[in-house]
Length: 213
Image (cartoon, rainbow, N blue to C red):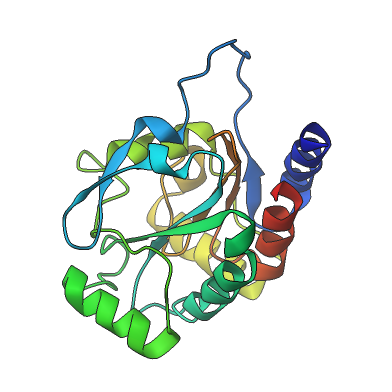
């Protein structure tokens, strides 16, 4: 049954708007190349081993508090509340690399999210997701789930594509995070299953999460 669920999500990730499947790899008997190998800092700068998430379905999101996509916090919280009891977690990584739209301290960001959107899922310390200062977790996530382009039939996707292409005609040839609220879905074995660009409908994200639970 788990195998069938995994296959269903992997196939759906190819066609879901704004999402991509992970890069294929040769299976190994003992796979240590998963999300559990990483340690991150929480919002109070304490180390958190992601091995504590073993056996859970995880959605990793880079967020910002002053972005047009910021209201997705509400949908993320609803998703977390609905499926947490079934082994679902959201990891929120604030990032100020996109339009400087996450300018606050860890404490200020947390206060905003809890006060405005009643967020209860774990919020990590602010990080960089691109460039030389990118955390090792995000370097790994991007390698596992490449950028597959925006859905330009969505006005928001078309706008972002036009904006980035004006800056760099070849922007879509690298796997960098393009904007706030990019999401990576990780299965119960710690493998990246799909990448969702911020314009992907949260209903598609929810369906992919549900299929893994």
